[in-house]
Length: 322
Image (cartoon, rainbow, N blue to C red; front, side, top):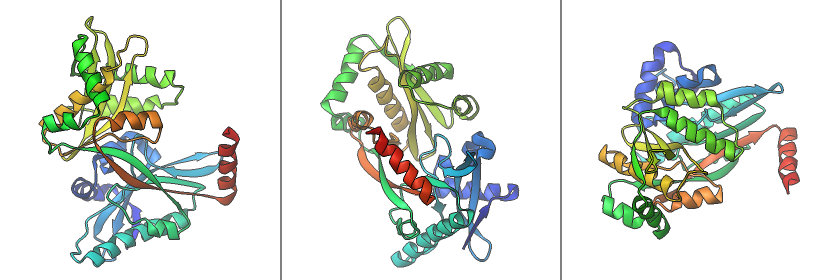
């Protein structure tokens, strides 16, 4: 089994595999947004057949190569078509893929590797054996096969009250076609929180990628038609992912964001998708907010490795914060 760059002639085969066995974040139309910053690799059996793939962002800072997930992309993969039926054979096939990835990065020898594994990968031992730190991350995933009544019942009382109060106070929510509204509220939120955001990538997602077949946004408005909160969702045929959101701190309402999110959840269910993924966070306040919608806490693994001097420097930097 080998791993190498996908050629232009192989991209259709890669996309077919990604659509069947991966997520929208593995597909070429998403990855193309980030140009040469992203590398797409295929996983090939010894006979030359492509059976899977992955992608990652690579950049150079201060002469050091850094490998990480592509922008706005929760995991780098890998996805794979497993032909085996026996449980042991399935495990061994998936493990061979991970061993191939470890071997690839050992040869490339980037200064820093920080990647999120696909949520379906629970065996990260090849990375552990390869000297990587395997660290859990978490998201919340909402099962949309339940009735809307049950979904609402499973929410926390606080989140239900937020939505009820927003409606009682005259707020309205509707599907948003003008994505400049989304951009404005998101940028205002990031600036207020003093968080960096690459506006080039944001514009690419909102104005090049987004269309009615792969994404939607819902925005909450005050009675005077001023937008005060928004949530933007991307999706494939099975799963919707909350990608970005924003709200107005000056003009906002405590329940405006929850109302927009709940409308997005309802819309996702109406479209026939099975899962709404909140793309969770380990930041306590954000985690608590997502938790209130009643989704299932879902772990996945991140794998991290750095040259030893850099690892020591990064540890010292973290300690210096305290």
